Image (cartoon, rainbow, N blue to C red):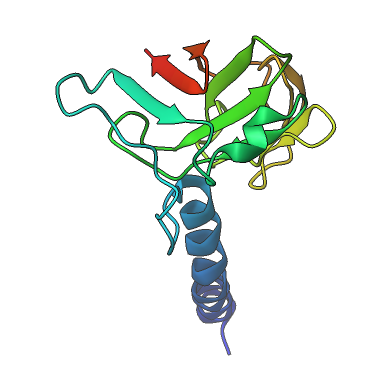
Length: 154
């Protein structure tokens, strides 16, 4: 077999083998949706820059505890979903789940740290980047607590 033909075959086979891995990697960087969107926050039909929910609702009840964190799936308010962290009795922090590096939906905070499953970037509960391929902070939204009602605005 001639050298040129050999190189052509090797390159063609290498590309064919690499395509599935590349497609899987790209898909994991942009996947925000879940099979179960039942925990979506409800966007206000009058103002899509505002969402409200009740902490007494079982989907959000965990946020009554200081240090708790939950995530929501994609919505019209934020296409990546939201991540919440209960900082103290009067403060709830709300961030976009979109990793600033490649757009993967990040995980909830565990012991005050959230991790991007796509690339391993880590973020503090205040949204600041700790490590990984990014030094950008998470996008933060304004959260207000009034009794058991929570209002999130852009």
